[in-house]
Length: 135
Image (cartoon, rainbow, N blue to C red; front, side, top):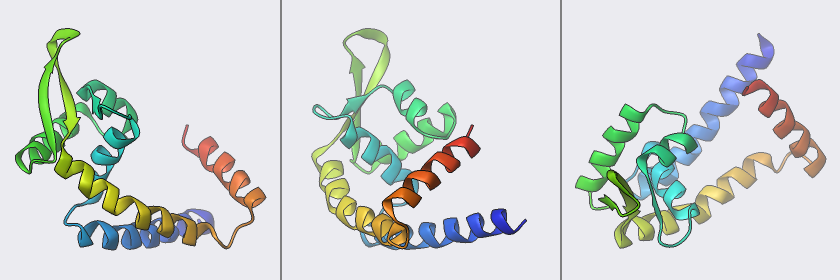
């Protein structure tokens, strides 16, 4: 119980700090997840909805809801997939890219600040342990 309690408390602290950064840019964690995934994909910053589901921990219906919201906000654009006439592609718009590029530096700084108490060896060990729990 002590370990799970600590994991829960640390997760809440991290979520709160990251949430402050997201709120400053007018986004939430779900928006960050989609925009960051598209940004990491590299130019032309486009993925299929199926690829987005594969990189997140939510269902395809949750992704569909997120995409509808982000498209309405002008942060992404849905287009036909030239390689699959039945499918769509999710493109990061210039506005979406500007937002994610402004959020990322502080996001990474918050992550580093949380891990600063651990040596690089401890960070590697923690990553391995959390990976084992995540399966």
